[in-house]
Length: 243
Image 1 (tube, rainbow, N blue to C red):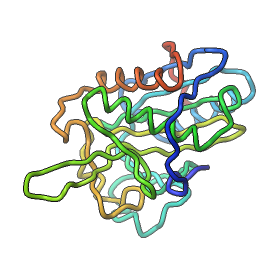
Image 2 (image 1 turned 135 degrees about the vertical axis):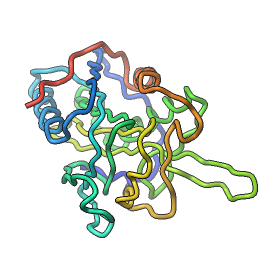
Image 3 (image 1 turned 90 degrees about the vertical axis):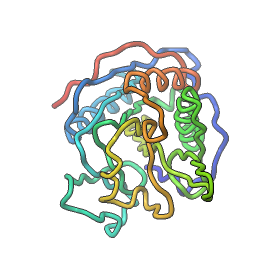
């Protein structure tokens, strides 16, 4: 488990496999049940660790829900009856998932790449920042604050930093699972039910909220290009079978 807030900012580095084997890239249509997705993800991660399956990035959307990472504080769940709440083994605190948010579950074999957790998380952050850059959005990371942030400037007001993507991963036998959540066009009012990642001083934004009419397909294309830049080639794959 990894809580990004405990780690200083390492510089993003490429995290390619020496053998150049492509990573499966799967996209699920519609909304995918959270518990079923987690079960399928954990099954696939175990298969990767056992040498029975290849690496996979799985893109999907969930129905509205809140998840509590291993560092979640009960007081940060402000509206416990608003949406279903799930305990999660990933690092971090409370997060929201819902329609219009692109979740990418990242199942990579760090033994085949590099057993460096901090460098891996830095590469995940760099991936999101690179994808945002394809829409001329400057993403950044901040010490002590989980995720990727953007600065908003309004004439007459002090600059404001809002969160646009969350990152929370777990490793088991050096295979990663869970991953990132990029706000493309979610209902931002849904974040009001929690203190996102325990941060109260800043808001939450999305690509569409920033004035960019980005579709989910366009966001997926940017994510894929950014991923290939830092992690290597991908190849189209089928999503994991749901239990």
